[in-house]
Length: 149
Image (cartoon, rainbow, N blue to C red; front, side, top):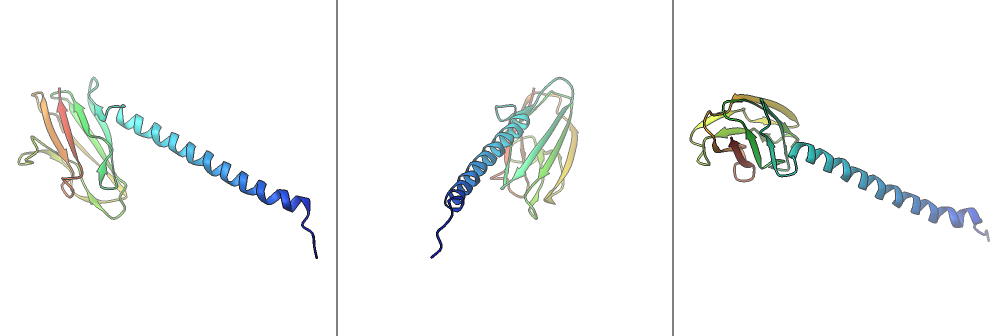
C-alpha cells in the first residue's frame, strides 16, 4: 500500500486555503470597485447633476431599475442624459415629463434593447420645480424625480 507523501498531505489543504483566500480577496475588490462606480454616478445621495453649467448625467438601467432616483438641473440649462441599458435584450428608455401623470413630455428617447446606450439632450424648463422621469416600458419600477432649480 502506498503512503501519501508529506507534500500531498500538506499541499491539498494549502491549495484549498489559497483558493478561498483568493476568492474572498477578489470578491472584496469587486465590491470596492462597484461602490466607487455607484458613488461617482450617484453623488452619495441618490441625486446627480445640478452643478454650474450644463448637466451631463449617465443613468444605468439594470435589473429593471435605474441607478439614480433624482436628477437635478439648473433652470434653462442644457441637460444631456445617457442611458446605459445593461439589461441584454430588454427594452428601456428614459423620458422626462412635467409630472407623474406623464401627460406632457419634455424630452425622451425611443425604447431600445440592451446592452447598449443612447443619449437624450434637451433644455431644462425655465421655471424651478420637481418634475418626473421614467422608463416608458417599466414605469412602475423605473422612475424618479427630475428637479429643476
